[in-house]
Image 1: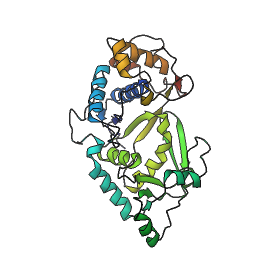
Image 2: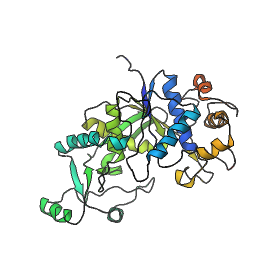
Image 3: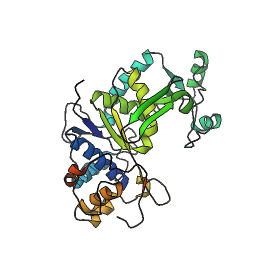
Image 4: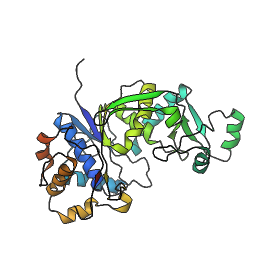
Length: 317
């Protein structure tokens, strides 16, 4: 079978200034696409319009250009898959949701977050909860009664089935959706479409066949594989990368301004010291030395990239 040209995407959320972890993910995503001679799409994941602003998105694009990370399709350069802001693509998500509703797989859920936590046992590995299916079997009369006082979220029924896949960096993975996830949300009670539905619908419509992202999203793949199957599309190849963390193991966060790009741009005249140190810390360079994104292209190899999370010490950057 003829191999398709690589189409990857970087899909940041403009909820604040990019921090070092975002820069690292953007760099590896860019290197993975460019080293394969592929096309890179920039998609702005701003489903939560209260936290994600167009001004933040403008700064984000400027920061990516400063880093030397370019793209072939995106909000500013256009392309055949416009619009590239998720907040402008709700009609696409509504169409995907309609397909799932027509299959009889979607139902309204009136549970509050507190009720879900009270009715569910924590997932053993990460403390998250598995939805107990409380609203799955509600009668039409009970649904109508609850709808008079609560606006429901919409959930997708999942099968008691294990979904397996081969991650390009972490190898074989699998999860039983019923046991490890439960019926998951497609649209929140406030009308905002959920990440799982939006990202799958977008990747299908945009022809994305390579997804590079942080290891924290590894567990979302089985849900997305299920959605790909229901929507009749071929899933992409997934590559997950280790996380950058604080010394105490806490993941870097925009909310806490962990080495955000505003601070870094004030400290350095160009991106080379930042990118070179990141490449060294993740295994692409043998020593700490300045390097541009283009300098790193011939060195990029998934086998060199570390699999363990990378702790960033105070003052290291």
